[in-house]
Length: 510
Ligand code: KIV
Ligand code: ZN
Image 1: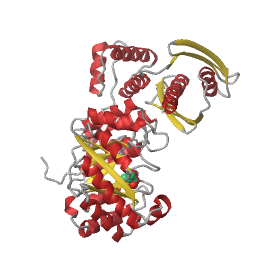
Image 2: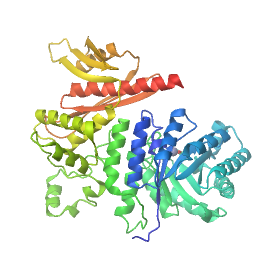
Image 3: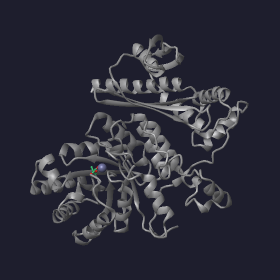
Image 4: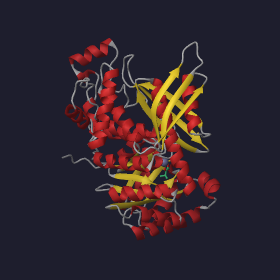
């Protein structure tokens, strides 16, 4: 048991993370992610911004209702309507929190809020007191704190604490600070604010200059006891501090950063993969902690060192962050039992039809592909989970491609159970596939992103395709994998179309 000060890990993947363009998540995906975060033992889950939409309200309420031990937090502007809506959404949580904020920098007050300093101070007192009437756990944030006049920032925080705020967040909203400066800001604030010991100090750093993690760590070294961060660093613009990086920085360098968190790092890899699957944002190969290459050693000198002693080039073990040793999975003769064990060792607990379906898909894959690796199984199950309950279902695809053309795709789908067929030409096979789908499911969304990655090595590797569609401002991302890149493309496109249609219907109903 460590006696190091406890740093609260406040995960904002579902709120600030979801605000990144194209990263929106479905209700079910949000619940799935929140549940994993609780298992991973983050302290606070910022589940959304309840006043932003009915969908956000419903997601925050459902996450609050399913929560067991984590604090469930909702974001609210300083208006009475926002705070009441947020209180309503988090009330079923065992430990509800209201997080209210207002801008304090001159540029934000003048151009965004069109409010003077006195009006801002008045709004802080009123909003925090209103939130405290709903719950004892109230966080207050000074948006754009790092570009705020220091004396005014102290005054704002004085008012927030006097009105009942229990956590004070000092965001680097525009990712403008550097580590020494941000750390010094915490030190000075804690020294100058009246009753600074009555609140927990929190860091919230954006990554516009690539300094979000360094700034968060510097804040902790200077008195902050909560870090707001997101899995894979998801968030507005260049993102937030990456959860996996702040957690592992403190764990690996406990000698110089004597702090502790309750996060179980063995979940980091899975959490990263889940966020990537849900958002369709691929994880950069050389991303710290969770990138595909984070534990890969290519050069002869490094490989030689690793074989002699892993400590020569590894400061943490892949298993520490949940990276399973790449292993060959059973071949096509493997039984259902062994497959189920394999899934469980990878953290997938499937039963009944879901298990049968996954097993059949595994067998089909093993027929096509000589070696089936853990990563192959993970994308296979992720695909299956992502497709659950979709209206438009992929059945068959035939494509003519190559030099002679014309590039043509014939596709069979079912839409609400009814069989549909289309044939179309295109400027290349992918274009032909997408045109055929568009003949069946007509829409005018534009294709914002089309990306292909190999799941493993080898020419028989599965391809993972990510597709992002933009339909009148509604974004939807789809992802799918298959040994045939065109089949993966068709399925990924259909996932995105399914999501887009569902979101459009929701917007229409609202
Ligand atoms: O970046 C920011 O300032 C925020 C606040 C709402 C906390 O996300
Ligand atoms: Zn933010």
